[in-house]
Every structure is written in C-alpha cells, then in structure tokens.
Length: 329
Image (tube, rainbow, N blue to C red; front, top):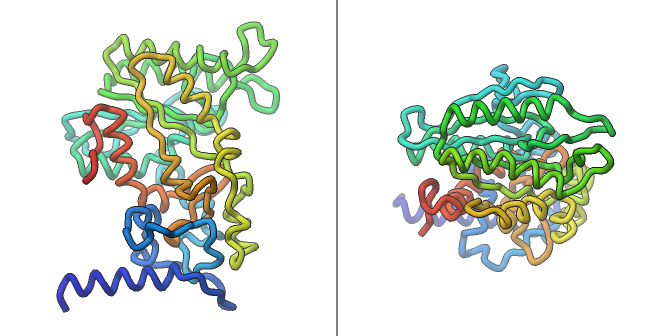
C-alpha cells in the first residue's frame, strides 16, 4: 500500500475516533496515532471543529486516572532538577542538544517547568542547548512572595541564587513564567501586582545588561472546572461540562500581570500559547484531538505539551526574532 493511501487511512482513523458518539464502554487509552492533540488544530479536516462541544470520545491520552503523573520526567527521575518546596538551592540541568551553538535557559516555577519536555525536543531538533533552573511555587522575582500567609524565604533565596547561576551560564535567551501575580510590598503591608512587576524587572534588567535576551511565557488559562481530569473522569459522556470560559480563565491566571510587565519593559519578548490551549471561540476544552489538556491544578499534561511543539516553535521564533524556533510553513 502506498504512503498516500496509508496517510488517508490514518486520517480516517483519527476522524472516526473524534466523532461525536455515545458509548456505554469506558474510555480506553488512545494510541499515539489516535491522539493528535494540538496537531489536530492545524489539520484542515478539523477546521470547523468546536472542541468544547464534543460530548464523548472513545479513546483518550492520558486517561484521567493517569493525568497527575503525566508530567516532565525530571519530576520523578531522581535528578532533583525540579527543586521542591523549602529548598533554596537551584539546580541547573541541561537538555536539548548538548553541543548546540546557542543556549536557551528556562528559569521559573512549575508553570514553566511543564513545558520543559517540548523545549528539550525543540532543542535537539534545532541544535540548541536547553538549561533549566526551576522550582515549585517560586516565581523568578526579586520580591517577597507568600504561601498560606507566610513569607516564602526559600523562594527569594532561590531566585537570587538562580540569577547568579544564569548570569554565570550566559545563555542567549532566558524564558520565564510563573503562576503567582502578586508580591509583598517592601513594608510587608500588602500584596500587589506592582510589587511583583518591580521584582521581575529587577532581575530582567540585570539579564539584559549582561546581554541576555528575556522572553516571558504567559501563564496558561486557569481552569474554572479544575481539577479537569477529575471532571472528565466523572462525566466522560458530557465533556462540555468540563470546559470553561476563556476570559475568566485568563483573569485567574498570571498572564495579565506578566503581559503588563513585559510590555512596559523594552526588549522583552512574549510567548502566548493561549490560542492552542483554548482554540474555541471563548471556551477552553478539556480534551483536544483525543488528548486531555490539563493535569493537576492548572498545569498542562506532558502529552498535550508535546503535541503543541510546532505551535511553540512558531511562538518562540516570533519572541526571539527567529534566533530560536521555527516560523512555520
């Protein structure tokens, strides 16, 4: 059978899996071929698909029961690359192309770490090295952040050390992202967006002064129906119930603050993956192309992240003036 015929059969298989049809059978684990995820968004046959209206799929990847563990390998491989709560010491890890002629560094919290697998893949494909310095629940800011009304001293110490490590590594570009939108004022009287932005600018300006480009990766929309995987598990034949309003999801994320911080500081690039995560008009689907979009909290599944690599490559190229990523067809 010719390659063209095989491609047609594969496309038909995907269409059949994506059809709106009820089933008394439990949702099964989709194969990689049955789960195009974000790749379906660029497929002409799905140009008119409204993903948040699909009631049911016969196969999905990952299954809701596995969603919490569908995350970058460095969370669980014992490497310590994702620094945990309470630890103020950053760990710089390398991936991508170890002999690459350019270096991109990821510095931030878990909302950035969730994209590490995609950056690793892009680096290996495009010939650049990827460094990471990430820590759970700690934004890369020279400002005090709190958790349960207590100041996270480990976050401030980690950030200061991560800045030193970054300046020493001298990457071509730093990509940063975070979940938190506010930080404490200097007098500790209140948490404000302005205090967070001033803390971000403090670090970003030092990077720029060292000749390191800064790119902000906007936080993804926060699911109002979270945990999404639990909603999907409980309502497998009513997936629209697990979708949520895009505008509300954006407002509950740190994206508005990060966009403001980037736009008022000269030379800062922006990566915005919102249209890939929430492609419908004003809605964010729970499942796209047979791939579960969200895992724990407001984090994106590794499976969906990997399927979104072409879109990320385009955004990265736009944010870095073509130094990294690909402009697409």
